Length: 279
Image 1 (cartoon, rainbow, N blue to C red):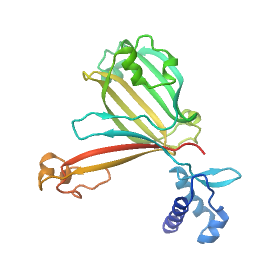
Image 2 (image 1 turned 90 degrees about the horizontal axis):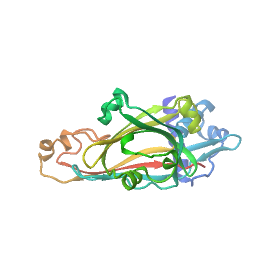
Image 3 (image 1 turned 30 degrees about the vertical axis):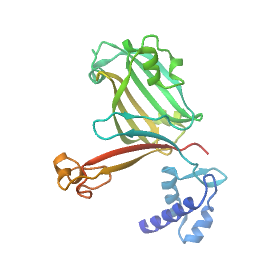
Image 4 (image 1 turned 180 degrees about the horizontal axis):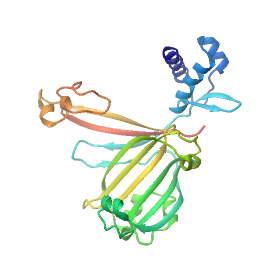
C-alpha cells in the first residue's frame, strides 16, 4: 500500500509541476483508472498534497493546482552580523481581536525582564494577506514603552516602524523559534481551516539596540499556506578549520547530516517564508 501511495503521490506531483496554478487535474475516477489504484489509495495521496498546499479541492468542481506563492524573506548575514526582515509581498494587514493592559505575571515578566506586577499591552490580532486570514498573532509589549498605543495602530503599517517613529524604540535583534503544531477550534474558526489542521507555531523575543527585551510574540500560521525555505552559502576554509570553529563537520545544519560538509567553517543563511495566496 505504501509503495502504491508513493507512486500515486509522485504522479500527482508531476501533474502539478506540468500545470499552471489554478489549472485542474484529472478527476479521481480518471486517475484511478490511469494508475490502476483504488479510490481510497488515491484520496490518501491527494490528502497529503492538499495538506502541503500543492493541490486545492473545490466541492463540486474537482481538484486544482494551488496558486503561486508570494514570498517573505528573513535574511541573516554571517555570524555576528545584524539581520533584516524585508517587507513581505502581498498586502498585509491586521484585524485586532483583543486589546488590553494586564499585569505581566511571572512567566512573561521573566522573558521581558520586568516585574511580574508591571503592566503589559497585550494584543491579539488576525494577520491577513490580500484580505485572507494567514495567522493569529499574540503580541506582548511593556506598556511603559508604548504610551497611547491604540487598537487602530495595530491594523495597518509596520509595528517596528511605529515603535521607532512614535516611541523612539529601535529594535536590533530577535530570537525566533519555529515548530509544527495543529490548530484548535478557536484558531481553526478564525483561519478558516478544519480543526487540527497543520500549522506553524512562531515564538519571538525582540530586543532593542541596548539589548533590552521590548516584545514577545507567539503566532500560529496556516501550515497549508506558509512554508520556510533556507538557502545556505558555505564559506571555504582550510582543512580542520570547521572542527575548530564548531561548524562544518563538527556542527549540524538543519537537514544536512554532520560530516557531509567537511572543511566548511560556516557562511551565510537566507530563510524565506512562502505565503500561498487563495485561489
